[in-house]
Image (cartoon, rainbow, N blue to C red; front, side, top):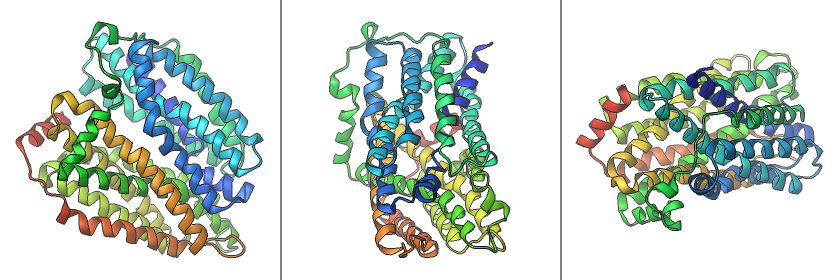
Length: 421
């Protein structure tokens, strides 16, 4: 097998594992286990907790002691055993600790897989900028494929979703040991302090007003991402309790409908260079926030029958909501930070989105839904839930242009040209 195919398979399996349960765990939680909403919010915080420290720690280990591909394999094998044990858990407290352990093993593999891919491509004299994106896109396809498998096999509310994820994780863990070697390089290069390795020096950027505002909004939008991951599939599943909707396609296979979001994500990536060139980084960020308003607002008034078009449109808009801020935000960091700090600054950006943002979104949404939008019979007032989320993102969109001061720069132009090619 050539190196590109091997890395493509790695990416496909990497995100298939996540897609097997991330979107459907809410259905398992509420319909299978019938646990509470506030406790579920805590479950989704595990991704944020693990994202704050584990990728950096795994990076230190792979830089200094263990080959990145071997560490990738070890993490996935350990994660496979944890996922296999999840269906045995019979209370929400234990479930939290087990899923946290799983995320501790899984979240570092996101960065480790990138390290493996970049190293392998460079060692085979490939152009990373040109050759990696077509490889990475298969990760999103793997996520979509997992949603379809879990949905078409009728396992959205079943513990089998964790067994599927476990089996694929075990396979990838073993397969990772056959990938191109990525030995530690720290001993051959400049020695980093522990502070530098963890990316903590990038926190000095908070002293600059514009960066402080940027990172704050990164966290707040990271919370919005958790809302859609946590509750989108559960929202559609709850229509099964309404006889007139129970047998409709969107209700029988909600994960397939939700997979339109990931399909849209792959397509909107292609549109980003045009929007960046036409409007600049600041307004592309703003478009992302407005897209989140539409994402949640359309859900608020949708149903699987006459309102199915709103559900589908909401899923299409997700691509803009997700891609536009993540990529424009990373370009902002790339063009505004000194080269010596870019790596740690990008890590801080992802920490604010996937770490602190995930924590904030998980805890706050679970508490709000439990105390304000859950009826006595544990059913949910989904219309007002989505209106609340839409209002939250609307506030972000309205305030952002006034507090974030940024002008188009030559460095931004250069970055956009690189993205186009």
